Picture 1 (cartoon, rainbow, N blue to C red):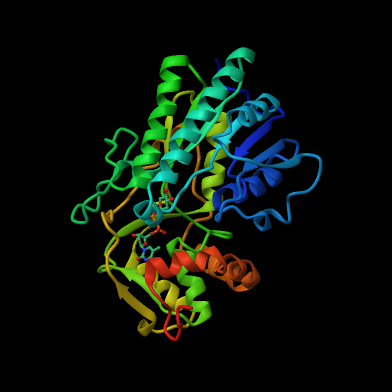
Picture 2 (cartoon, rainbow, N blue to C red):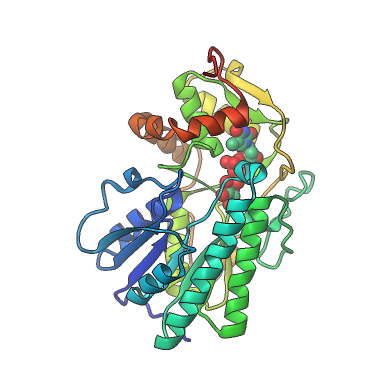
Length: 357
Ligand code: TDX
């Protein structure tokens, strides 16, 4: 199968299009490639939310299908109706994977294999069609804090340290295997930590921002020295589009924005932006197997495809993100109620003043 051509009209099957990255990607494609059609397949579990797309989910170029990526018949029918797949659906939260790894293996590994098998059948029969798979920098494991110049390249060994990253690494390797074995046209991205609008408030930035907006403290794990590399979700969306249109078949591309911060630095930046003092930080026990540092070398993507991170620079990008949560209180208040509350209580205990009933 050959690399797909530029500027052809496409019909994308986007899996997980109601989640954080998925909904931002749907919005990005609607703006950047308005002639393309989109089928959004999402099972609407907790992190998937139709409200995330209320503004763009209209018109004949868009359709939403509620369904599971492990449903082989459904997936095969939808792939048959589309030209390419951007596979974003996943269980993504490390802490949840530590509580229960089962859904991570099912969705991330079995779901990806289901898509691969269906894509193989449909794309091979028509000799065209590309699969873009969103892997993660977490597959590389952890870097030490004492050699800050070291970064992950695409050739770094995969050493996942938690059930989430192990499940993503397994899926990532399955994609590789289908390319090597069957010449399926696949491209893989391994991206650093995303931030931006519509992120589920189990992840650190929306959790801390919304807690502070509610007047609650923020639970900082361990000593807060762990380092993450932060990219604005729109920059990741532009990377996904670049690899879909121009990436080399079978290639893996790291995606990062040279934006490393310790959790302590991030927390203090958020406290500053929201006018809160250090007394709002609650030091809680460390995450099990907590990776010390992720840092991405995105040179291959920049050199081969001319991609650049343009929207990630702090403090402006973080300020815009904080403002989004300030302006969209009804969105996160709805998301933070219901099943989320049980998760939060299990994870962090009770807020001050709560009875637990
Ligand atoms: O309450 C918290 N307190 C805290 O100190 C939470 C939720 C997190 N943290 C720390 C743990 C991490 O060092 O903040 C850092 C970021 O945590 P998360 O937002 O949970 O992200 P992380 O574990 O780094 O994983 C993320 O990056 C890679 C995403 O969740 C993954 O989906 C992505 O693949």
